[in-house]
Length: 168
Image (cartoon, rainbow, N blue to C red; front, side, top):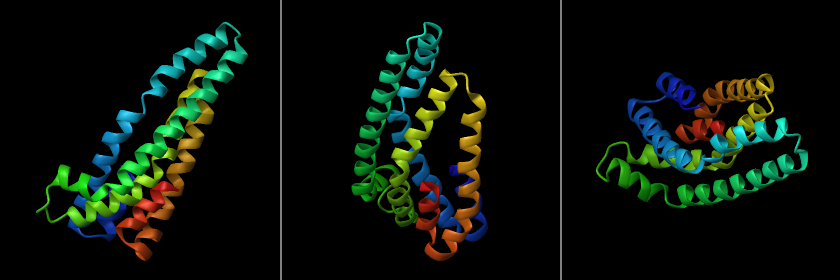
């Protein structure tokens, strides 16, 4: 997502917008990495339960993981959305020329945290079931949507449009 955003902002936007999007994406990524610990735990556990034919336990683990992921996503989204300006100041500095763009991008990109975390979790669940094809298909489709929507949304909404397209 960050790579696609960078590509389109570099083609349509300014250098300050590009730097702001890159900085905002890095701040988003920091919080994503902190909250996306479940996929690395759940994949081997699902594979183990599948081998042992523990379907009820597998379903319970998946349900609990989805619930926890969404709770973490909502909390992180709220934190980033409400505090985008202060987080940007903390990471970029208050006198930076890109603070406005970083804050704007981060604020709207944060709306996709739940979706990003859930996508990562679903990808790991499918890997646990050894269903790599479905996982890859889902990610390719979402990237194609982002590739198509980024330039359209940027034309109408500027940098925040790129962030909103990433949410979709």
